[in-house]
Image (spheres, rainbow over the protein chains, first blue to last red):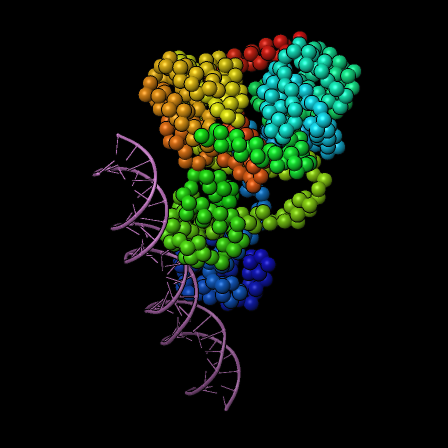
Length: 283
Length: 283
DNA sequence: CGCCTGAAGCATAAATTATTGACCGCGCTT
DNA sequence: AAGCGCGGTCAATAATTTATGCTTCAGGCG
């Protein structure tokens, strides 16, 4: 039980000195952290032993025990209140805190708009393609590095991933596509005509098209069998760009983790690959 | 800030004994209530003074202060224990929620260990180099895409950034370095001898060396004029890797945003560049 | 190889906490 | 009214706990 509640409940049956101690603790619980039993006694003009006896009467092992309990109680009551409070006056936050909040909002929003089912279907499609076929990946503009990063990760899982950042070359690659293969197309605004053309072409060859775009209605997304979407907003364009990228990254990471955990073989292969890379790098 | 997060974040840069203390506290935070510094020392077979020094290094006033803080942290976590519990086994979280929590912890820890001052100095060094000199950027292994992404961003700000992912070529580039130039070296584990050699060489040419590594003590970091550090942990290696990357990204974003906001000219240039790119892509 | 730095322990000082025993005032009994 | 018991308080002190200074040792570097 909360020590503060306990103190209040017993207050009525206390002696005068004890009651003064009780009142002091109830009123200054926050300050207690910095008080030793001696200091508390001085503050009230009483002896230190009275303080200790007070705590023992209440059933604590001693003064430090009471102090610890009061600390817990305050923390519980405040819950995350003080986080919120300190968060409000942002001036002396560690650097990056504001940005971090923006990112969190966007990542959360992104999580909410991609249903479990969408993610699941994505994972299954890539998994299936990885077993018997190929995964084509294309990302234009700023998305290219994320596309490329994802392609690298897939290859760590033993999935054949073909990455291109050039629409024309990708068109050539795609002519080798088989039914069951997957095309992952990244485009923030989904407006690139070349990319749309590729998606259509891929679709004709009976491949599954997965698009990754901003959460707007856009031509590319309209062509998708599965559409992953990213939410990210900020008034400042350069912040918005960072926020978009981190949400995109998080979405991809989510898919990747699902993929890892969908299958023990893949998982084992990944761990082995990571180890190997680590050793190569450190040498 | 939560002492447990703090302990985790600093764990990497600790000595063996300190790390054992850290692990013990992280694993047995609940038992801490009943441990004096001496008992804790006995449990680990180390000296009591090591325990006290450990707490002081972390910025606490002493052992009781740490203990009190841990008590608060536990209480906060348990405070809404029912909420947490129901949320946890409600497996109908949106996908990616667990990963997101991991990332958040790591990003928070990373924010804590890079002081405002460190970030400021980094920004100023890059800013100065951007005006009258060059910024060299090298990233090996998995860090390369982050190094490259950062180089691209700098160039959007009108800062001359020279990116390489190859130690040998970078060595050649560096021979053109002038005093006042900056070298940004990325390496998760900071153990690559070639990179260290480059950093030393660069230092001789009176350039500022900024390193970005995991928050361990490592040879590369030791050579730095300014050391940015990343904290990231998870039991599963592939999760840890994702978490590391997102913390790294966030750190870089933080620096980038500071850079943007340090100067109106740069800011304007950036906005113009972003617009231009956008139009090019959508066409 | 010698120097330096930092980590860890030992011994000890300082502080905090817990207990003891004495004193006081109050109410109750005789 | 005097004596007695009792709870409450305190000063003194014992016990425990925490903090610090000093020494030693090991690893890195010139």
